[in-house]
Image 1: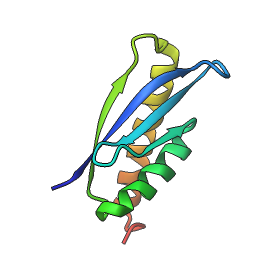
Image 2: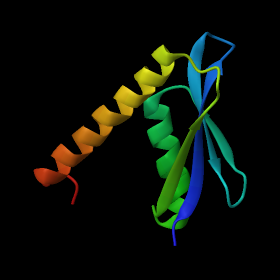
Image 3: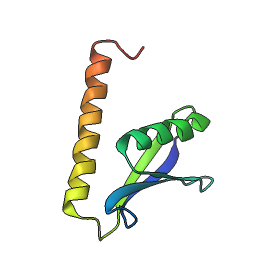
Image 4: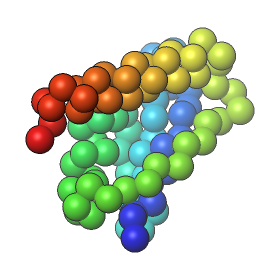
Length: 93
């Protein structure tokens, strides 16, 4: 059984950007991610406690701008595509 994390996209009022609030629903640990690289680092670090077996449930606040949502969506799609390409050529063994 995988651990469930929530990833909530929010507007970052401190700098006008966005953030992802990553929460482990089992112990309520929370990390604030201000980039997709930081999100990847934190999800890997938190997921290590569960052997990497995690399910991420995505949400967003209603005030998240279309531009910020698209930036995150497109960035995650690019990351997923790169991950698939790397696995196809055997880089992740």
